[in-house]
Image (tube, rainbow, N blue to C red):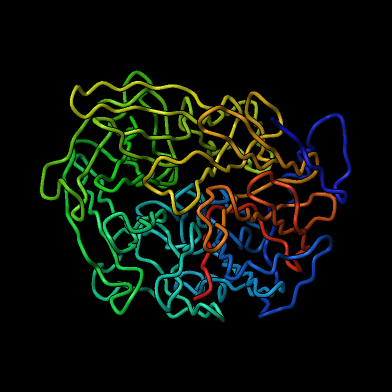
Length: 497
């Protein structure tokens, strides 16, 4: 079962997307707004939705005519859309990092970017400058009475949840040492062992890599406090963006990646450009017992993973002696070479991401893999109450075309048991971001609720917020936002208390 719902404000064309429509999203966010009322252009905001959609992503991509080399080097800008009783308001604000304030004052880049952005002055100006600029641009979550803007190579920045004012770097009540890595991809345990908690990690890389696994309270008087932690050391360089959890395990995939820091040290490349895939090698599943689970204190399990590269996992669960892990696999690490302009990349030359399933038998160490969907996809999620449990449904951003790589232009709901799906499409002139699934309050029906997504509308050169019914992706409302938000990364939903 599949259907496509076209936005009436986006004209239909037979020849696919236009590169200029996609690249037109890359621009500086020129203004900050505070609690601006929003009205739907079409439809109505469901009265039952109550909470805030937080989104993070690069908001400053150019200074004095110099563009970042990769959008991931852009300074973080958080958007908050509050939905209460059928009404909506918008607040957006740049994260006042130390580096952002310095570069705003100087009106030029003063720091190198991890993904290849160089300071003005050529190689000599960049040589031996190994400072990492905390751009706080990858994700944003609410933990207690603070919002945290996350960038996985350093500590988070704390923000006011209403005004988005930057409080400053947060050590999470002394949990993190200065500049200690804290992943931008935490997982939220809905309460497998009694109380809900946030599970996250930090990784220190090198010839041997150390993963620090942490669990934090998310409710009650201890909200935000560290409950459990452990550290494990693994052989080899670990490039880890995401992980998955079950009630008893935290599952990482250590991609088969090598790192040669010399071009970074000599000022020729950014640190991430010094990564290269080892296509003839398998990655490793690093399966760490959670300290809140049945196997607390036991050593990690390490198994060979299928060849390929993974940024994001969908979900994982336990089934007898098996751990089942759904992930988005690429044939190779997708990167932008030093001489390329990210605004004119050829999608056909980059590998597509395919949703795949691995069954890991922890007794026999056998790993079986299969592809769940052959359509290019990213940013897949399940109902948050199913995090770490077997889920039937997933929602994800997909390409409009059925095979091959292309920009993300549609939202798909996929039945993970029988492959049936629904599709809402913004093509040909719209481009979607990460969908966020909001369960209907007090409902036990897995696909009852809503999916919210930001859409870049190339026709009007602006950003729309679209609310869809989760069960069939029929449109509830479309809101034209008063700011233009570049293609970004991650966000979260904070339910009204």
